[in-house]
Length: 125
Image 1: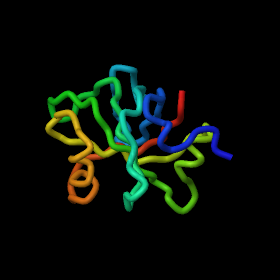
Image 2 (image 1 turned 45 degrees about the vertical axis):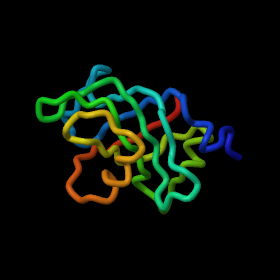
Image 3 (image 1 turned 30 degrees about the horizontal axis):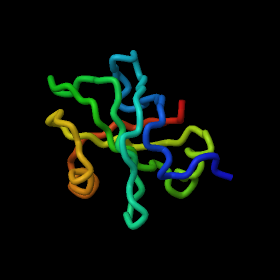
Image 4 (image 1 turned 120 degrees about the vertical axis):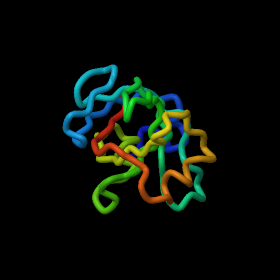
């Protein structure tokens, strides 16, 4: 049973671990992320996603603070698992320009090949 609904995730604090790239470092430290969920995909979206604002990290000389989390293992994990407090595997897609990502940009990030991403896991808390 889900302790939270998907829509109620907005505002939740998240923590994460980054496995790829192996030398990832953010303000939080090596291979670590922390932040909060700013928005979630709507019920009609073909792919569920979370827009997260995280403690910054650098990519190609630019500061990155927004990531779009999508399930990495869609066959074995769900956002319902995440709502229940479990750690889930995610791809964290971001805009390489370092500009804040608004909801209108998310479709472009998720459907256009070539945007950089981190591979790791996240959980509430």
